[in-house]
Image (tube, rainbow, N blue to C red):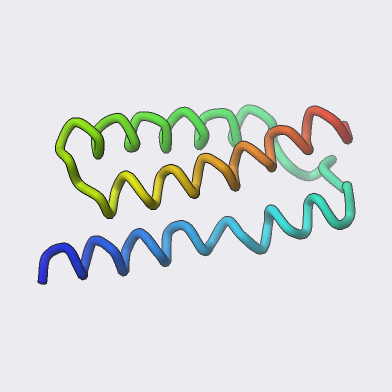
Length: 82
């Protein structure tokens, strides 16, 4: 039961990045996105990933790998499309 709650939180927390990532890459519009805020979020999810790995908590591991991909894509777009 506990893992199901973790997976649900992981799914919701990860899905929230998908619309922003898709919109950013489709429009190539990044002027309203803060590079520093997104870098901080990227660092945060990387730390959560490490924490999840140390605990062996698969909901944290999976969610943060996907979040790193999404937020990393936003950061990359911000750097490319200034």
